[in-house]
Image (cartoon, rainbow over all chains, first blue to last red; front, top):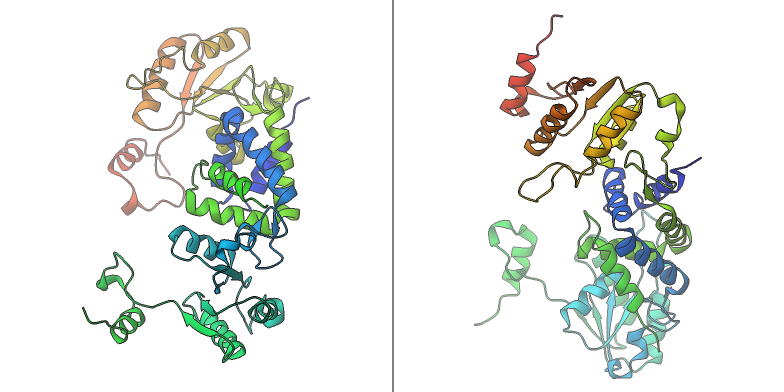
Length: 197
Length: 197
């Protein structure tokens, strides 16, 4: 007696991933089964490892495979700059740009009255601790340019005012951006922050 | 010393799935790490199981976890009807419709001169064997309505002509389809096959 129960369970779990629905999960699982030696087995192995070892850095909230993440563990990055981001995806995006050489603090979301997320639900108390205990000279608020992101930035700025230099990312026309496709808010911000050539 | 090597490896493997690119793979992996107890561990476990047990049915080419798949193993489905499909995704689509009660034969692709795929590369010899050795009364060619699919259907029809009743799926307007959005070929086919009400 044979069974496809495991295959169905695999499709069901894959369909829970963001960006995949039942249809694309079926396609992915068929692809995995066709390439079971090259793709499915290695993927299962590395998932087991990550499931066993992945954790959030106790210091900054980044994900890694140890209690303290690579960045917090690297003394070269203790340059006094602390970049505050909403979540790990934002941290990864900053790291890909390669422009920031300091350390991070991952809030784990934004303040939201609707969803009852207050400062205690985020890593804001820990951020204030870090500014006091580590030698931080500048806090860069790299939060998303959304209402919730900016509300959170204002709250943090209020808490830290006077203790440390506070900066935020510049707003303007993105590289490669076409004016015709930009929203009015971005154009206004870029105009107000215009620079001499 | 901590390391994100395993997490990077997981992202790289996930990005190889159809429908996922580097960006959506990163999103999926962050989601998995956040839900590591509820989603990542069960997914890793079921992937291990499927990697160890999944195989193609020796009889029809369907995927399952035994040498003979559920459908070939089920005597109730030996009703003399054999539905020929291109791949397992098509078999699953037929099964979801619930309308077909016979057995399947999965070709594993279509004939293609460009890609040098001849009858020997597909399960066509095995299909001819099955028509002779099993008590097959009707072969339904449920191949895709593409050039390659229809070429393959013609080839199989030539091989089996006179030995068994050969049918193909009806062509016409899909349920819920709007004429304005249908291609000319479908409208022509639906018109030629028009029925009395």
